[in-house]
Length: 159
Image (cartoon, rainbow, N blue to C red; front, side, top):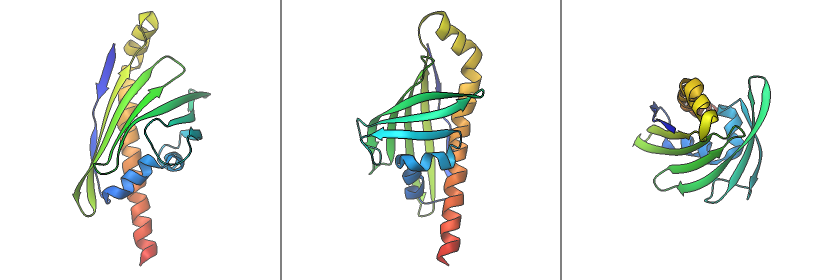
């Protein structure tokens, strides 16, 4: 059982700004204010094989989940992640950033939610698929807004 969502957005910043917000884990709470980075092993920016542990609020409860970095391609601005949640739900994400020009890029977020087998997976898919899809789109929009705000602030401070 699975659900695939592939939202895309044009972001009015150089591709390096978005890429930095994706691969520098300490920046994630700036655009995903509902999560906190607990730690990464090994520490540092995204590297293949790295595991990042997060905590986030869901329905007033703190849940812990992790990402395993499966792909980092800085030349093509591509990041592959495998998400593990305590509910048995997994996610396979492929995020790609493509420069359009010097100050604009396109971000594609392809996510496949993998539901656990049995009645629990059926329940999560039946009751949560729309929420999961909306959450993925929301995540992309948050990244877009935070990157544009960061770039505008840097431009203002640089003048």
